[in-house]
Length: 142
Image 1 (cartoon, helix red, strand yellow):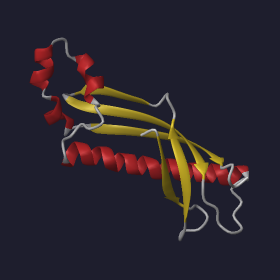
Image 2 (cartoon, rainbow, N blue to C red; image 1 turned 30 degrees about the vertical axis):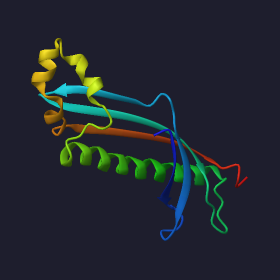
Image 3 (cartoon, one colour; image 1 turned 120 degrees about the vertical axis):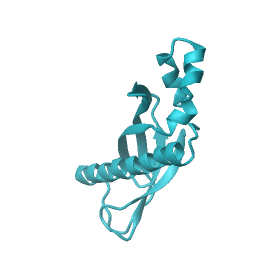
């Protein structure tokens, strides 16, 4: 993903959402370690977001409000990413995000790698997802 628009629950009104234009920073990193034979995958996701929606009488420009939106965005995206990675690993056993390319370095030979059988072991993965969203108010609103 390079960019997308997502809607997160509003921290100000439980019946509404805030639309964010989200872009992925280049220094987002994934790391894989093999611990007790199972992949332990760490994803450090860094995102920039601009607020696209506004509610009547909302004041997203205040520093405290932007911090609260960032906190909600971090929590929401982390939860969604965790759901996604566990779904692809446990339910589908499909490494569609190519985490295996980070794990291959732990195997000295091709035979060791093929004997490990990455896709079978990928279903035993554990994940540590860290999300850092930097939210700014959109130029459309300002």
